[in-house]
Length: 118
Image 1 (cartoon, rainbow, N blue to C red):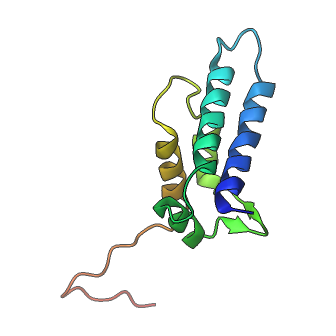
Image 2: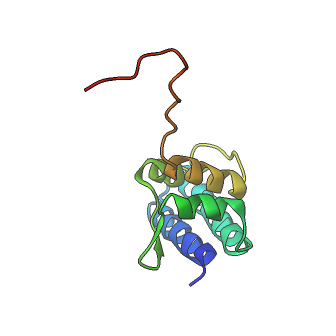
């Protein structure tokens, strides 16, 4: 299965989760979020296989056992995508997921500083 389809399937699951949470009192927030996630899923499914964001997600190890596994830090972003108000396109969502999947960058030691000893 293509990686783009794996991402799309993941985003569709969150969209259905949002739709299942809809009620009369949410003022359309769940529906708005679901539509935005379905839009992002369609966008992801159409990405070319050589899209840089796919390389970043692959390097971060998000594709395992034939499935896209959303990094835990990125789950909150996806769950609340466009929930309060619209903002950002599908490419912004994928970039945010990739940024959360990447290991933190630790600054290099500066010249002249003593290394840490254990």
